[in-house]
Length: 105
Image 1 (cartoon, rainbow, N blue to C red):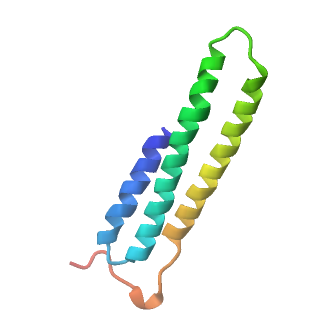
Image 2 (cartoon, helix red, strand yellow; image 1 turned 90 degrees about the vertical axis):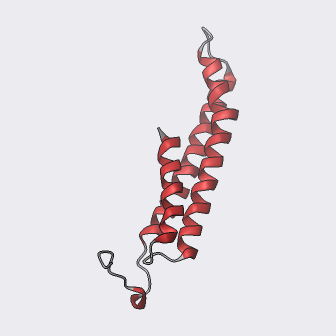
């Protein structure tokens, strides 16, 4: 679910380049942040989640389970903070002289 939302945000930030109300700098910044978050999610999935899933199939949990779970928790926290930064950048008002009517043809 998270992957799909990050990909949609990434695609949306790239498409926002065509919107005159958004600067290219802003859309590039949001796209870069979301691409970084997507890469972090892939690293988390491959290096932490899959081994955790493998540990869960065993009848007893090893000591590595707690460490892996903590690593996943902190990686998710970092990802979430970067998503908040991207949202902040995306929603920050632009310069007043750049006002564009979105309904104007």
